Image 1 (cartoon, rainbow, N blue to C red):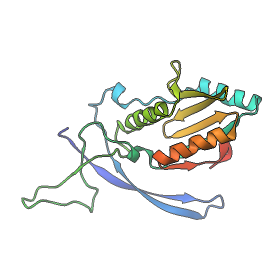
Image 2: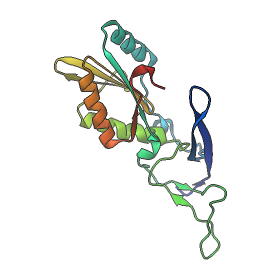
Image 3: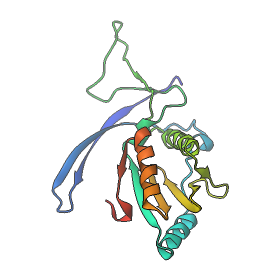
Image 4: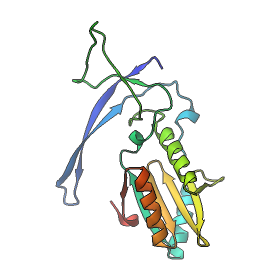
Length: 193
């Protein structure tokens, strides 16, 4: 595109349960208020609440294992699917020899970019299907796979996954597959942070 989007830094503090500061974070984000994107190009399917409730209820009823995965900086792990130009944040501006302001051409998505969730979801879908998971025709946020006669489920919520299945070893193996391709944080079941 020929429109240059502004950017800025967002500074946050992550806190411990006792309210002490755990870490300081800075994230470069795009301010994308454009109306040019169609709904299909920004929509990212997430698991439906009915599917989520049913899967968790059934898992609890039959005592299945439940694990959670968080993708660290998920959107910047996915490639931009079109040309996006971004103006550097205040204080980081540069000009060329003619005095024109330089901008960044994104290779990866940034938070705030309208199509970032969709780009990440497309990359995740390709990965899941490549390693043997099948997307549900009814709920695109649900993936299933049969291992050793048992059904395993992956529930996708933007950049978080819930893994459900009988054998913790199968889930652990899948988490290792994820970690080989993506930067992920294992939240150790549904009682994680």
